[in-house]
Structure formats: C-alpha cells, structure tokens
Length: 118
Image (cartoon, rainbow, N blue to C red):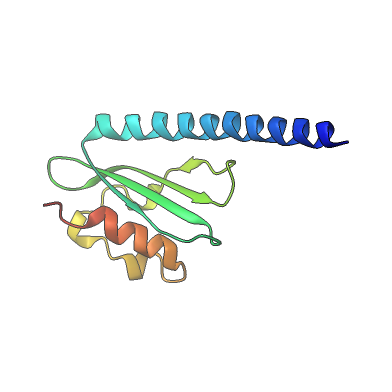
C-alpha cells in the first residue's frame, strides 16, 4: 500500500512538471511574438489563492499598443489571450481603472505593464 502511494505521488509530480512545461512553452511563444512587435511592458498581479494575472503589451515607436497578451488562472490550463480592444491605444490613454473596472488583478497587472521603466 505504501509503495502504491509513493508511486502515485511520483506520477502526479511528473505530470505536474510536464503540464507546467507545456504552459510555460505556450507563454514563451506568445511572449516571443510580442517582443518581435516592439517594446514590451509586462505586469503581474499577485495572489496565492486568487487567479494570477500576467499581462504583456507591445508598443510601437509611437507608444501605441500593437500587441497584447493576458494570461489568467489558478491552474496550468491558463492560456495567453489577446486583448484586441487595447490595440491602437496610446500608452497615455491606457487607464487601468477604466479598462478593468471590476477586476482588481487585471488593473494591477496593467498598471505595472504601462509603468515607466527606469
């Protein structure tokens, strides 16, 4: 019985590693596509028991959004999703409280993504 539990734990751990690698690979591909479009700003919301949010925006030479990616979720099944409604907006016109009035995690991630870099 103990050997079966150990085997189950090892198999679950290996499955978690494989699925985590799969999610990271999808994220890296989407992020690479954004990096080819222009300068990229990235923001991430925290939270241990709430869905985490990673938001990335690509800006062209005029500081307009030319690409975007939002990844939200608690599990390894979260996928990068484009935010088409932000494309074409100037960086100064991006107001997190207006764009995401009901979603605190997305507001936080967007604020970090558009913050000036030092």
